[in-house]
Length: 214
Image (cartoon, rainbow, N blue to C red; front, side):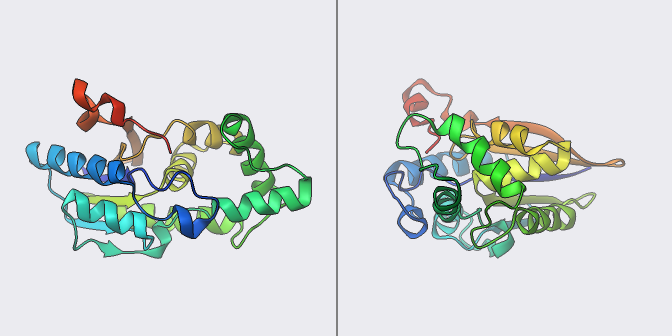
């Protein structure tokens, strides 16, 4: 049996209001990634291939985990959230929420994107296609692949595996923690979701404060 392990990047610049400003790890995000890398090494986990997106936060996460030689693949990059929120505001008059309200807002954003009412710089279908292409290539019997990516990418991967509708995709994306671990088992009947949103490296009492979503 092969495995595909998906990891969300560490906490980024959560106070940002655009894509470029968001794309760097906070000090806590770097520490989260270092703790995860240590946990994986302590368990003796090894990977035949390590991939990360080309975004700064992906590379910084892989490096802090101890995988500085990860292969960069732009197909692992996140949806451009801020561009999509700007498009939704322009077309529907719905502003990006500040603080509270994200849980209600995000499904509306994803639904509008899915219906092609907004597109940003990439359509929903194009995003789904590149996520599916990485999964298809990584899900090889007998191989163990690690992918460092983003929450929305992981949500789309789970949509693909479980055939979720856009609203349920949004709902499953919302609780994804920074540096969370998601497992896909490659079986004789294809890839199967085997683990979701695990943060065992943050279980110690003195690390519980480090469980973050943004």
